Amino acid sequence: MELNEKSVKKLKEDFPIFKNNPGLVYLDNAATSQRPSIVIRALVDFYEKENANASRGVYTLAEKATERYAEARKVVANFIGANPNEIIFTRNATEGLNLLSYTLTSIIPQGKNEILLTEMEHHSNLVPWKQLAKSEGFKLKFVKVKNDFTLDMDDLKEKLTEKTAIVSVTHVSNVLGTINPVEEISRLGKEKGALVIIDGAQSAPSLKTDVKKIACDFFVFSSHKILGPGGIGVLYGRIELLEKMKPFNFGGGMIKKVTLSETEFTSPPERFEAGTQNIAEAIALAESIKYLEKIGLDNIHDWEIELVNYALKKLKEIEGIEIYGPSENKVGIISFNLKDIHPHDVASLLNDSGIAIRAGHHCAMPLMNRLGVVGTCRASFYIYNTLEDVDALVEALKKVMEKFGK
Amino acid sequence: MNHTEIPDDMYREHILELYKSPSNFGELEKANHEATEHNTICGDEITVQLLTENEIVKEAKFSGSGCVISMVASSLLTDKIKGMKISEVLKLNQKDILKLMGIKVTPARIKCALLPLEAAKRALE
Ligand SMILES: Cc1ncc(COP(=O)(O)O)c(C=O)c1O
Image (cartoon, each protein chain N blue to C red):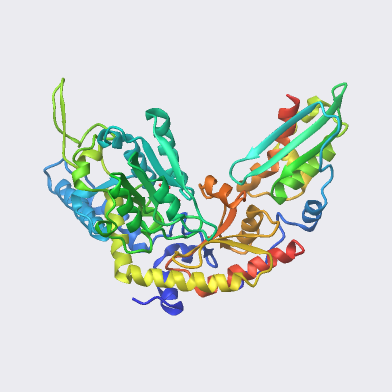
């Protein structure tokens, strides 16, 4: 389905939040997306009609729940070009990265002791590695961000060595909207024998993902940013690696056999899903994926680009605005500052106009340092945003400037 | 749909005026109490410097950078505490600050309004 001003306005009706908050201009999609009623319905339906624990009972309801959960895993696998046994349900992208930071040491070859990240990582793809560096003696290196807001690939090549154990890079910057060349990064990482992790939290919403084409070892994303419910996320891992990795959590559902003296773990993905899973959420996540696929990821990305280009053109008319982001190869995220006005003041004033944007460091403090700012304002678009929303944003920003006497 | 109306709530005229020309902005030559508070969410950083004599605040200044709310709260607070007993300053709370400011501060921004008070109290403790 092609997205344009008209079809988007129709599609917006699928999202009850806009009915319940008339006039809401929601431009904080990089933080979390809104949910269509079909996804909300899926949660309610499961609890009202099908609730039982998966993988445990032999009665009809439990078998059905098991089947639905397995189906959801298939939908997710298909969404990113993986096999179902390579899909681990987590709580969110953050938990996926933490899982890796806890378990990868079991498969890192001797002599490799460096982790390569970038200056544009979200704290979720930074703090777990800092912890690992501290506890296991890894050395962290950071690829620079260039003045054009893209990754410095020469710097990456220089910092990637035979000692690099892990390369963990965001697919898309949650601040700049930059799309990083993840295929090239994977290839370069593999050449040095490193494990390559891609943080897909900001790419999964609007870029068609094919993990086999990227050729990364691991890929993480969160359901709540792709119209799905909260509390569930996805970790993809190459099966050859998952089979060698130790579990992250221990408990029920992840063991083949337990005696008082020994425990034998099950195969992936169950090995990494100890305890009762988020069954309803997995099913609802599958619904959100089906919804996105029906529209088409390419159509979604095209619309985001149309919105973001229209917004950039209009925003540049505002005197004293500073925009942080690349001119191409980006998603629907714009970071900016108004001259000498604190981002939180901008966001508060926009809120008075019913416009929701994010202001602050966006969990990317090292990137804020790199940009030389305490924070930025961030407007991020998704499938239900219209050109009218952009107009409202621009008008409100002009009012803010007036208010501050600029 | 018209979203362009900005109702004056937090950002009333008197607040913006004070933001543009705050009182007591700068550093004291002689201070015997000083503390800096950060708001990690928005990067605000306010330093309060005080000169006390006989348990009374004689001079108060603030420096740093922040949003309208934290800068204005700093200006008003430093004015207010001059001449106050240390023990009274330590008793000031959120309500007092909001009364000083004469505006409603949304929950997400309360921390900004309280930043200078936290700094002043820590300086005196
Ligand atoms: C690039 C990036 N990575 C990771 C995360 C963490 O996602 P979650 O909070 O859902 O775990 C985010 C969320 O803002 C993000 O933007």
